[in-house]
Length: 153
Image 1: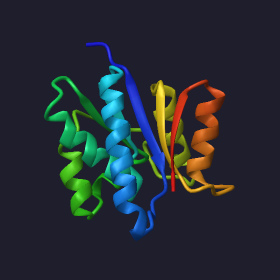
Image 2: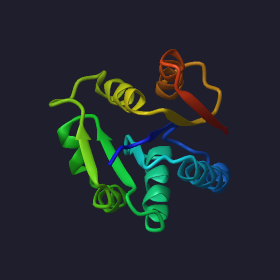
Image 3: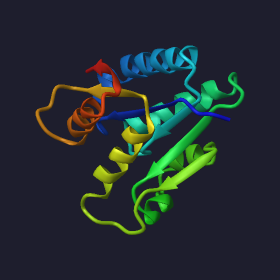
Image 4: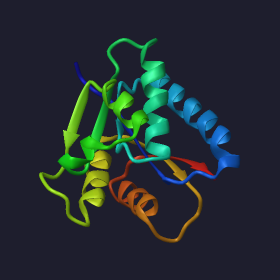
């Protein structure tokens, strides 16, 4: 099967008063991606945006046969996260890619670059910060000519 891939980037701390709004917007973006023929979805499995996206894809994938949810994990020990939601969602993945064989400070950036290189579309949950991983990932996606769909907080 040939894959058309979409990934997500976004902040870990979504304000409580914005969580329902962000979930609704992510559901809409995932639905649009399905309509546009995307069938492989990558999540970095960090708290916040990444896990919310993975949960939405896992939920909607039940109605879309052949969909692949892939976890892009920055380093092996991250798989041992104690977070129950993380463990539940990792079990829903059809694929797990461990990007680096060990932890180092830039392994998260390396994971984000992997996801963007694999993807034609990047969904970004972004609050306008002038620095940080989400902005860096959006800039990298732009430099590679990827489609970027921004959900503004």
